[in-house]
Image 1: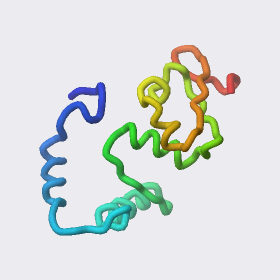
Image 2: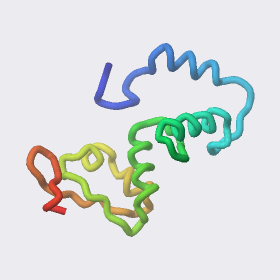
Image 3: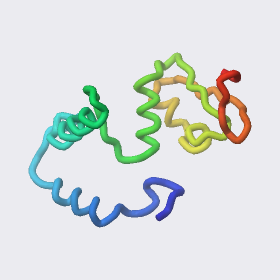
Length: 117
């Protein structure tokens, strides 16, 4: 395994087999396909409430889009200066939020304490 990035190595054989099996016919896009709908049902059952899911291909997309869902363009995202989102996402949060800013906070051992906020 290579933990430097979620797209540095190939997927497991089981994932590739599932992708190949799903790669047939035509399906609707933008979440209207049977796979996304099925995933939405499974996550709703898991969390015991209705949820909306939007599968993405990479961790960077997942991190930035998740922040964009809860942060308006004029908002701020507080994070530690040593956090992954600050050091490794290369402007993706600002891009996908439409302008929200990462505001870094210090703390021992790269952790933020409530008093600091």
